[in-house]
Length: 257
Image (tube, rainbow, N blue to C red):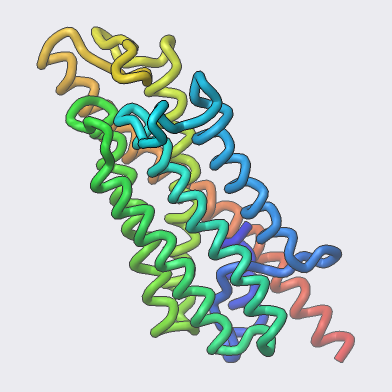
């Protein structure tokens, strides 16, 4: 929706277009930000309290055990986006809506969130040399693209191309997260000659030999490429339909004006 909203906004107001990171909803202005806040809270609860077998992530002496470090890393990523959402609401309330300063501060917050997400995945405590590592390495490419385009949005707020790429990469992050969840933690979809096993309190994919590992990594690269192209084709199809709607709206405005 972000991508289509930005395209529609640019087509309706090409001269005054300014890229937006979130869009007010007709009835509940902050619905999008509320959804982000709710989702991140659920994610934090899942990582720190619901997921762990003891329903708390700390050791007996109050320290963080090594097998729960990844839970804290994931929860920290969610916390960063929660902060982005809540401060976006605050900025919208205390500033004139859709000003360059407000948009710039909102983009800066989102850049920090994406930057920390990239850093935490890049320096992840989990061993990422195997199949999971390949999926995470590809994920980092998408996260860095989201970070870079969000940061560039501060310098080029009227760039529709930058806005298109940013929205595309943010959506693709979600797609790739779902792909990872299915391939890496669903036994039926684990690559051939590989298997799920428990290590340090979590399930990981291991392969029987080096050949199977290299095959699984190559499949990850192919999947990434296919999803990238298929998603772009789907977006292009919706974009064409959206542009037709915009043209109809323009004709109505001209007729009524």
